[in-house]
Length: 328
Image (tube, rainbow, N blue to C red; front, side):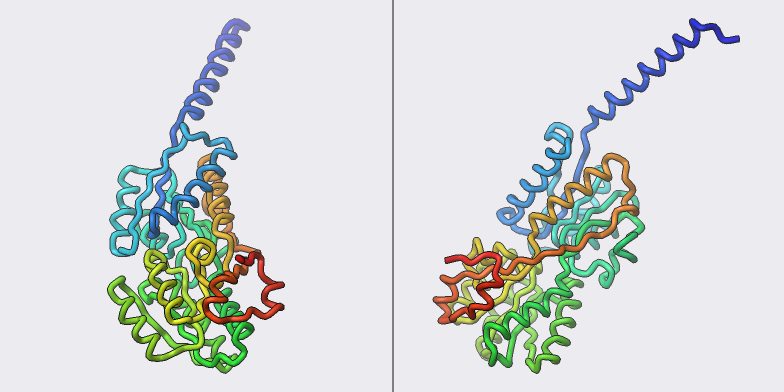
């Protein structure tokens, strides 16, 4: 028979071991790899939002190290940057607003959890099999750009009822953009509008694209949120201003901070906060396959009246009432 003394000793040892394990867990410093294709300036406030949400969830700065690898406009660098995270290895990879970045991360590892932020269509681009139960090692959020893009076309028609030719500036190298282009083409056909395809794969193709737009003289221009294009978005905004071409953007900051005309999109800051929540759940033991891919439920319409005036446009009252933010 085991003596009472031995039971007490065994119990004390178990308590000590549990406390030691808890202390070890508390002392663990988690490594997060953030893979992006953005400018440092545009990434900075979103990264700050992401960090703050982690703090709110109990992951103080001394418990989290975030390593950022930014390919900028060079998508070809994404695979090697993702491979660096795998070699470290990091505990979680966050793919920031980029289908190419998420694809590169998934190709680099099938075991490290990947949290994507505001990608296009994760099913059509093959990132997950199911939104509710994604399986594998990828989850996160979609920006619903494929479904929302036709809404931008409807906004153009509301703004310019007689518009018949609308140009789309897009990058075929981004798999998400092919779906966006297809959706817009179908919507244009239903509205009786001609959609003009303006492709820009590399930064040295912008001038040629601008020349083509000038020759085609569309009534309006729609711009995707392609990361490579966002690196050079100031060039697009300057061109649209010179040509007095109404342009609809996919990124709120293009209007609020860069002086573009109008944007219709999900609030990306909200999606970064949700990404931090997912990272916290994963670090505390939740399986990636049990975290559904989230989709935004609200979209913001932002109108810059100063830019509208420079373009010689009068915004219909119905559109102003619909706007979430109007910049005077």
